[in-house]
Image (cartoon, rainbow, N blue to C red; front, side, top):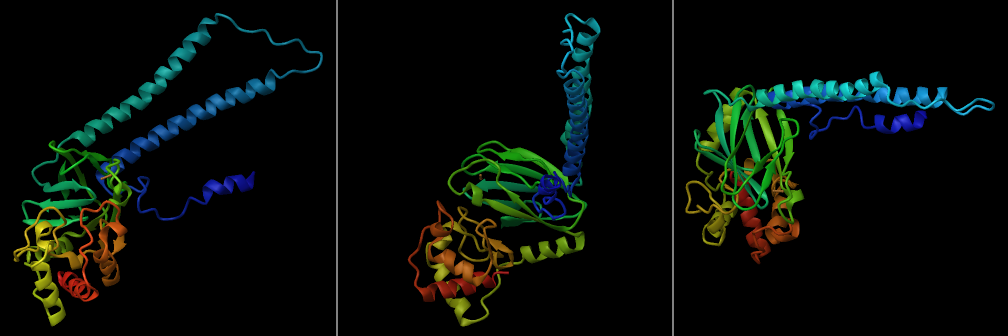
Length: 324
Ligand code: CUA
């Protein structure tokens, strides 16, 4: 029995980056409070029902020489009780549920920062219209300030979900949805597309970097600067290659002729922690593997294998890594 009890307990104690049970925003906290209320009501119902069952099993069990218990028919008090009890339980659940729905549905006030989120097969685009910033897969937000997300999709239905920050919100082609929340503690949270959107759905991850206001402000400043100039001949060769090949048809590097919108904005690619929508750490080695054959890393990726030589890959890796 003790061994069986230990099995679920092994799940306790660890820090789960994608658990809605450790809320880090007002929205997630509201949802978590509701979950706790319903959990304890359900636990009470469980104890009462299972307790009654056990009492019945023990008290009315068959004993030698004892007549079977008399069955009950048409007991008015009993029938009223078991009709009323579930109604009371439903009311107890409905009150906090409706209150939470109203709470999370109240639109944010003028202080909120607007961010446009666009879902693509299979990556995330984040635009800050008031700040003039566009980035991909890593959403930076200031702690303590409400962010007002305007979500849409460039292709199929996706779903935006950071379990520690709030509930899911679908991204629909041709229709804008909204979601707002205020993150209350600094940290990096991971999120995931939560609506099946094609072959690489499971690889459509993202990160939310919540920073103290001063840190966020310096991130904004860095993001608003144009792309870094090449510092050596290798980076220069990479930039020349980038700007005269197919890359510019799909990617933007601010301040250059690369203004494509199909793929992620690469202006500050080197400053991102992860690449390929959170799949891999952003290291020169992983980037080289990606450039050799993107669909081999992420099946279905729109970026084809460009047939680059190892020298060309080396210079592109140096250039893209320098874009900080
Ligand atoms: Cu996008 Cu699943």
